[in-house]
Image (tube, rainbow, N blue to C red; front, side, top):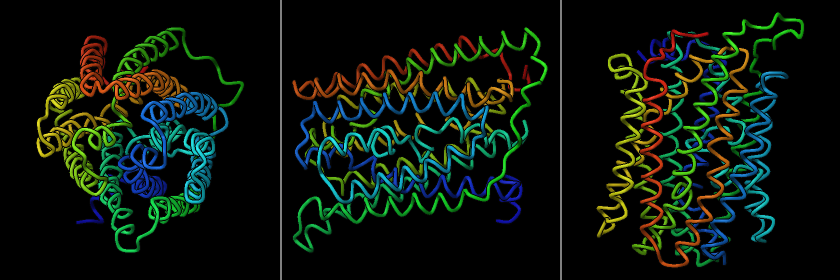
Length: 412
């Protein structure tokens, strides 16, 4: 049964390698998602500096995302995935040997540690290359399944990583060592994961890039591509700005609001990730029945409601439940969105489209964490959630309004 499942949902060896690498990265990102802002606060970063660190990471990540998207359509997607393994290894080892603020900020920005690393184990600023190469190795029929499995593996592995976030506290209590020393093993493990993903992805092959003498596509194709890319980008800009208010700071907010440690936050993120994985598989048949855009927009409306409600949570157990519901509703439709985007964009510009879409989300996400840091300094703990919910809701409306009549089969 397992072999049949793998053959149906991941029909090639290259797809399996990509998904395995995604899973390994997700373990690292699951841990970082929980501890990043809390760790920085424990080694002396102020709330404002934490927000600035996440903001700088988002800016650098946005630039790299655009570059990787455009260049991957010209020189290939594989080199960027290989490069990310090297960057992840480098950043893990740097975080494992120093606490110098400037070094950590630069490493976070370029190496994928923190907000700039991407959610659920995506290839950080090189996610457009990953999305494009996955799409390249699928058909219209298999693409939703492949993206769903990729997301399920990523979110399930994120759950494992988030549970590991409690290890530093345990290590510190048992061995009576400093905060830095207690976090060091897991940061060094991230470096090892980077090396392993580099090795796994080396054998991957990809289709040759289009010849320079290729005849230009019809004018209508160009217009359709441009129209769809800019609409995705505007919707992504609004969503990125909204998610940025709490994306990298949510565990830190729980730490401030309820006084809970990473050991208590990690299992909550883990449960949310597992539920997201379950819902991601269910999103595939739901999209066939109700349509891709209905599933995408509906899940984001639900996420906006849970985000807004989180600001009023009176106790940690209630807040934890809302975090789980928010995570699962916000992320479960991601494979459907990725598959849908690739399905209505011409194959030759998918990397560019993913890059432009990525930068449109990441650049505004560089601004909102700084605003959140300022609000937290002013003890305005509810405002980030109000702002995030507002922009997430606006994104859902725009997605439905612009795309509900366009089917993935309507490729241009």
